[in-house]
Amino acid sequence: MSVPAVGTRALAAVSAPRAEPSGDAPLALHRPASSRVHDHLLGGKDNYAADRDLARQVLDVLPQAADAARDGRAFLARAVRACAERGVRQFLDLGCGLPAADNLHRMAARHVAGTRVVYVDADPLVIAHARALLVEGGNIAALRADLRDPDAILAAPQVRRLIDPAEPVALVFSCVLHFLPDPRVPIAALGAAAAPGSALVVSHATADHAPGPVAEAARRYAAAGAGPLLPRGAGEIERLFGPFAPLSPGIVPAGRWRAGDPCPADGAAPVLYAGVGIRS
Image (cartoon, rainbow, N blue to C red; front, side, top):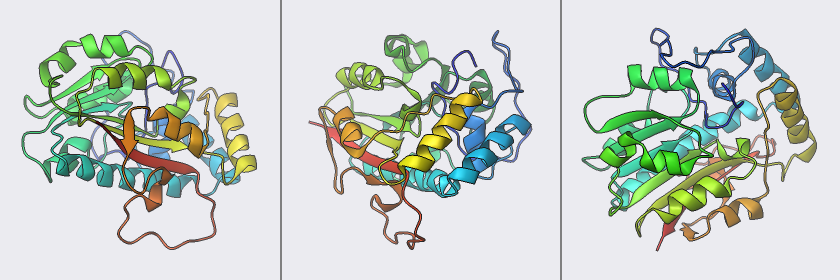
């Protein structure tokens, strides 16, 4: 990847042959990538020795990192349901990460018909997997793009074909904004182009409850070349929502957002916040 971690979000990988990228960017598989590290934390198979080594380093200081990854994935399913139940039928999965056994378009299809999804990521390996495993029919597309260039995302043919600017859209930033120095840039630009009733879905790393261990985990990400990892506080994350009014229960630990049966507390400090906002 030309810029470590920007535009990538890891998801558990499906049991399928590895897809090879067709772009012109060489893959540095000897260096960890945030998408593949997260894939390993979720028990996926699309990762390499460097990714597994960094994951072990993170777990040494932040053993709840794997639970946080799973909480983020479960939150995504609940958030997609909340959007679909409000009538949202089109989704931009921004920093989509590696394919999972249950991907966003399938989550949405369980609750609303006629969904349209564009998976966006900067990592050529992620997009190769997405094109091989996710693009099913005419209502799903994969786009290689940098989240720091939202104008290019809006102008991309895949987005112009599938995303109707007159209809509400869900802007999904799942476990990715903490890799961006200024996440306000994509949120503001994409949010300004979104119709009323659109949704903003965010899960974001935080050091509010475990400042020392999270800071050390971030240092290890940066030292390995997979960073920067930039955790933010609840107040900072809430301000990112701007005109998107957070739905109840607000910005909370991911495992507690509308969880019917919250996971029993194990004493581990939460390290991932989550929330969904709606634009009026």
